[in-house]
Image (tube, rainbow, N blue to C red; front, top):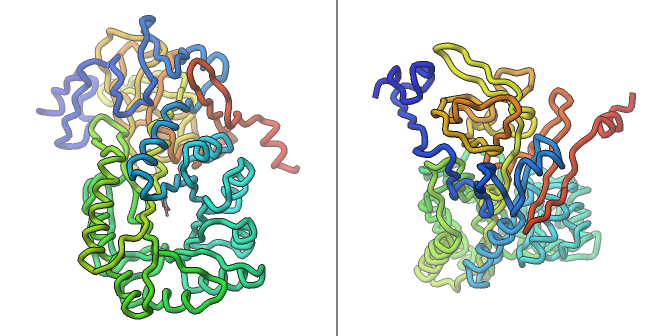
Length: 463
Ligand SMILES: *Cc1c(COP(=O)(O)O)cnc(C)c1O
């Protein structure tokens, strides 16, 4: 189809990439359950509700922009991951996707463990009562203070990321009179991106210790010698927003080979293997993520098969989904401020937030969808770009999406699947006040992270 005959009309000619046919959805009022939290529906009034609450009432009470998080959906996803492995694996939620004390309590109640990668995340986890033995500390450059706090608290594992860190953690643990359980993070030479992966011998990245060149084997040799460390397993994390299980297959095969080499050299079978996170979610209707039980069955069978081939007992598996748990549970609620029609070019819909509450579009070219949520509309689909209010032309929230052509200032629109890496990566650019996270559940709404105020800004700016 020629771009100048775009179904959205001549106004939208020439705005799409060459060869990209972008059809409007059959029904603009429909809400694709793939991208929206489970309790989101459009009610008889035409407006959208979540957790039994009308978004117009939420906007009224909590203001916009706001992240609205469906607590029952979050808990259901935790349970689905927990049950997917039938208790045969440990699920660590990756706190960097989104962390707050309420979230920590939900994780604890639903039987999940927690990954942290900074002192701040560790403090949040401990403050909310996550038992230390269910916390794992990550990071490619943990400070000695972060390591000390984690060891002192008694975290269940520290994932060692470099040769320096092996001795650093051992030294700190010994000084504290402890033996710290650790895993070694290895880079297996798998680069996974969404629908494809590349298996290589080497990897050019800052994380982990390479399997290639015997580096990981040397790290194991050193860790096994140190009294302050109890080496319990090998860790591998291959990427993010992955749909193709083949990358995990290559990764698992290479990690199991290392376990076999360790057995042959040292006579020990390490009891654990962590395959990381990175499992993809649907940001738009084009994405088709797998269910946790399918992923669990696939990972378990890969590891079992590889271990049998190597004559190893099957180690305990752990996984670290972040995005796949929290991503789909929240949407960002915005109010439309202006609609600017550039004849023959494009229509810009500006909202009251932007790159300060969702940097992923600017940073990763991430794709999102958007819907009009304060009312239904029978107007024709109009191709738009949803942008923020920041002083930067790259301040794009949704690059290309259809909204009803009558979208107007004062309407509420919402961008789904913003639970992961949006609030956690939010900034104060232009002295924006970071939006609240409002948790809804069964007819009640509660702020779990409040909106920033100008007073908060002034408190940091000491004059
Ligand atoms: C970021 C990260 C995760 C979580 O990634 P998601 O894409 O959110 O699932 C898991 N493990 C490690 C080590 C990570 O760095």
